[in-house]
Image (cartoon, rainbow, N blue to C red):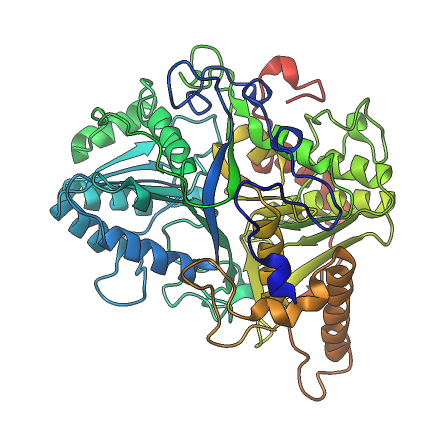
Length: 577
């Protein structure tokens, strides 16, 4: 039975995937030196005198598939906090009126406001963002901070980024003064914002924010957030502390400083309380936090990352270089740069080296090296941009997929999703699963911007039980095999859905079932939608490339606006992160 195959093994024993390979952390994960950022405290030993470490063991990991599940869990956790506890969060964008459970009184501002009234330390770091005219959400982010500020919270509008860059991390850390065993962190791709509270049926968030016309008035939205318990919670907290305690001004722009003074916005974050010891072990998973911070330029480096940090890029490159059977990716953006330096099929010197200008190269090279490797990618059917910006994103995605297909014809498949009504589902999830062993969930996209330019945080979980369960749970949703009321139990075990995707247990099985489901649905449309709609959400991703006349401008926008390079100048002409 699939359940037996996916149940936890005895604590302390080595785990093996169906390939028979031992999950040695040193082979899959980065050492402190490999992270490439000696200034960070995230790898520091918990006890003075002990060696530094860059991952933690003894963690419990639970994946919340889609925003409704995450928001309900977050609501429950925050409502249970009391005096002396802390709730700290980061956000790319936030809406104070987002209802975490859909009910009145569950708005983010109200939930955090009640926590403040109980004596909880509530703080936030929200990207200040650009103006609404640029398509971003500065007023919404500002209002969230101002609303919480009036309740007594501190929310800093953080613009310590490269030009055109953003703080893209999305996490919440909750620590308890009287019971560290209850400490928890949520890490993934879900903002505290409207549009995100959707579920497996993908009817969309009732509190909608319009995307492009293809997604309708309530855009269906697919996403993933991890719930982490155990020692890794302290690492998430350290990530918050490093940003909060950075002495650089929150913004350098004079007009923003004047506006802040007129609105009486606090721009000098107060001191944080001393950091508590790591929570006790809570499970069997090994977790490593991977991050991106850009190189800000001369005189502007982060105290905790003077040259930036690119452990997301380094971590992905290492894990993909070990792939033998299946790399499964869900991502909002899957982009590459097709330059003379990075031609399709060009071989690099070593499969273990990261590839600095080209995130697709790691997959491309491993497909060449491993004839049994397959890659399955799930992305949005349509970008969330119109006009020439859409063309730039389509160009980047087209180039990435074309290169992989050219290297490994028949071994690369790309899909998009739609709900039962035929409305496309916007895939905002950012996950990567390698051989049912190493699985990431975070804020980073599969592109150069996320690997070098914006701040990002992802959790890399080394645990075959988690990796396979996550992959099969996603397969159950996309194949339409979840029961209407099915979900994840309180102990993190599945509640039956994995039995119905037993044919996806192996890489071969999942590749075949995805292909069959997409074929049946595509054929149903081609035949004029006669008869009952085949089950599932999967459609094959249509080929889409900008017209030849628009490609030069699309290429320019891709390189400068959509997918810039945030590495130090001395690395930009190299294949190194």
